[in-house]
Image (cartoon, rainbow, N blue to C red; front, side, top):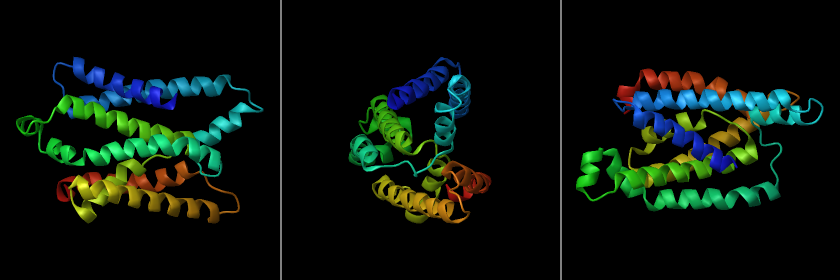
Length: 212
């Protein structure tokens, strides 16, 4: 259900961008914000109607993100779709390099850009939805880690994708250690990643031309 919900959300954002007279990255981002607000309202509706004694605490805790509820059974359920999405992305990493050169150059080299974009979106949604099912909503990692990966290993996705997997996993474990030891009770990971990630991303955004 998380996978299909993610596909619907991404598809609606792409649909908004498609029907815009001047399709652009900005329109896609704004479309994503619109769909994100819509789905956030739906989540709020579910939270409002949930049983306050049993379901509501679980929903609120899940929305803040945590690894405390992870189990072997949950991992056994989440790992296969995550591995499937990651393996496909690794197999097409050279095509992603070609796509980053520009759509016209990619088409000239024989790459079906539309099919490639759809494949990337499906794989990323599959991996993300599987992770969210286990850990809840832990934001900002996917926004800042790729930038650090490019700073360390460069833009070649042959190296960048494995590097981001390793750096992202290590960063999440570091945040989890801080969340478990900073206070007597565990701090939800989504709170820490937001507090740390927002200023870092703002800095990277202001220095975008320097790191690109």
